[in-house]
Amino acid sequence: MGRFVAPIAVGVVVAIAFGVWGFTTRHSATPDVVEGWAMPNAHGTAVSLHDSNDTRVGSGYIVTGASWAGRDGLWHDGADGPTCIGTDTATKTRVRLGIVDVEPGEEGNGGPRVVWLRCLP
Image (cartoon, rainbow, N blue to C red; front, side, top):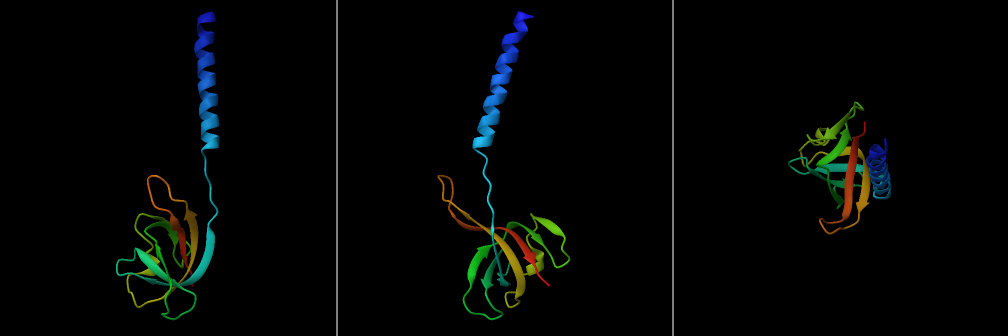
């Protein structure tokens, strides 16, 4: 019985260490929610967001990879892009965006990231 105690003790210590590591390195973020009129680029991968239904200069956001919901309310993963905004650069779509500000790190750039997009009726 004594020869099983040491491996079990080591296993418990390793499990606790991984638990503590997982808890301390876990991150979460609450996105800022903004609404406006989105005008897509020709590929539908980025939008210019405007406060009103006009063509004045807006804020630019990359929307590729963001989860999105169309006017029907069904959510989609970001793999196929938010097709509800289309690719017609002259068409404006009313949207709500969830934006997280990412801190720059050693391996990438920081700045605002769209994590979800909802096309509004």
